[in-house]
View (cartoon, rainbow, N blue to C red):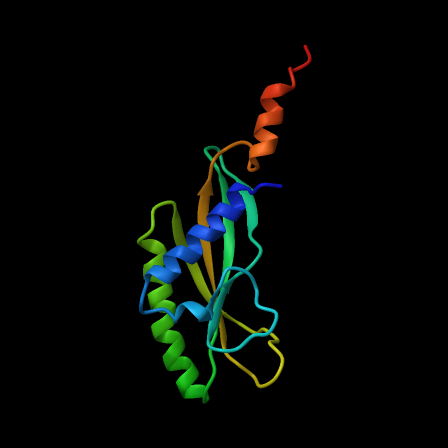
Length: 142
């Protein structure tokens, strides 16, 4: 498959995060869940898709993990969640819907995690270019 609207949305979310110097260094921002979590880091996880009357909405979990003492983790989450929120909300077509502390097993010591839900409005209809081409090539049966 050559790509999809979902993959394009993921790339745009990562680009928005990288454009904000206040989030994390680029090597700490992952387009996909990393094989080994090295905190602090952020990644974009698998989206949920839902249909509205006007478009398909993709809700991407953007996961942020930090390390340090409990107080240091909370201070870092305050700042990085705010920076993520602003970076996403300043980009057309997407918005931060919520940010929720979640428990996530990252292997090793207990680390605080926040999951930011980023909603992205996709075009209504086919999400894959190949599917769109097929839908036009196959005539509808009467």
